[in-house]
Every structure is written in C-alpha cells, then in structure tokens.
Length: 287
Image (cartoon, rainbow, N blue to C red):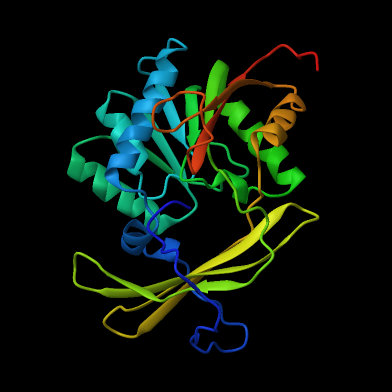
C-alpha cells in the first residue's frame, strides 16, 4: 500500500458516483497504469529495497537464487531482481496486473514466470525456492488467524529447508484509527494524458481485531465513460513484538529479525515500513 497518496485532510463528504443496487465499484487493480501512478513506490525506493534484499540473502549464502514474489502486481520488484541475476516467479490474483507485468518484463529484456494465484492459499508447478518476498506492505491484509495459517503453510510448501521469507510491513504508527477523515481530492496525469482524480478515506478501525479501515477512490474518464474505482482495506495493525510471538507460535518457522528496507540495518524505528525475515525449518523448535 505504498505510493503517493496525499496527507492533507478534510472532513466533509466527497460526492461519490451513484451505483445501482448490487453493483460493485471496479478495483484499481483492474487498471495497472493507475496503480503504478498512485500506489507503486518510486523506482529509487524499489531499487533500494531490492539492494537490501540482495544483501540479506547474501548473508545467508543466497547469491543469487530462485525467488518467488507473492502479490507481485506489475512486478517492479520481480523485474529488478531478474536484472540482478535471480530466477524470479511472480504471483498475483489480477490478470490485468500479470499482463502488465509481462509487458514490462519484455520491455526490460528479462524473463519472469507469472501465475494467477491468491496470496492466502496457493500451489504452483515450480521447484523449491530459496526465498519468497511479499512487498508493498500488503502482508497486513492477511487478517484472520485461519488466513495467516494458510498463508504461512503455502509459503513453507514452496520454500526449501533454510529458505527465507521476507515480508514488507507498514509501521502502523497511527494504530487502528478512531476518526473518520477524507483527504482533499488530488489529481494526477498518466503518460497517455488521462487525468485521474483520487482521494483516501479513513474510518474508525476495529479495536477487538486490531485492524484499521481505509479506502482509496479513483475517478477517471477512459474515453467511453467515467469510471470510479474503490478499494477498501482493513489491515491488521502489527508491531514487531506481536509478529515475534506469531512466528514463535508456528512450528515450521524461525525468526531471523527485523530490518530497515533501505539499508538492511536493525534500526527500524525511523522508517514508515520495515522488513521481517523468517527462515523455514524442518525440526520443531522449543518455545
């Protein structure tokens, strides 16, 4: 959920487009070019994150190796890893995102294997991986206990023993949230000259489940009609202490540590997000 969303806040209601009964808004994931414009981290950040991942992997004698990215979107991280010699497989549940990823990989002259799969539970016809990554702070969207168990079981099934799982996590410094707020309407222009209006809505979260509640709304004219996308998220609000206990409760995993995404150091308190790295193990651990 990284990107370029503004921080100015107002409290009056934004007028949304009317929808027929039962009709759902499309998702920004159906429009990869708008996702890249509004939510994707800048290239400089992606390059720094990949440099950190490469450094962390070298510390565990993976140089380079086979990497799987879950929720790869348009595959910016996958492409950068492939440029650095890694064999990369990308998973995403959006066919539009995977089509965009394939186009971008071909333009960059790299080869990716791409599969349409859900991030919570999946299987793929691939050999074991040295590393799995889950970037763009989307891990907190795996919300329930059941989904988390399925998530880690799916990752463990595709990792070799000793393989690493690197997860990008939002710092969640605002907690679950108690107020409703809406950012000012902002606008941006695509390379094709399409104007996109967008805003972010925040709502009171759920203290019982420890989850926030927010939505991003985008409005644009695709040449035929005005389209409004709306994506709502209820992310878990994690902290390193909670995540440490989560990993300790899972029999097939060992916590390696928490790291800055910009330089791989353990001082994470000054960043808006951080990496958690865990290792797949075969022998049950003592708690």
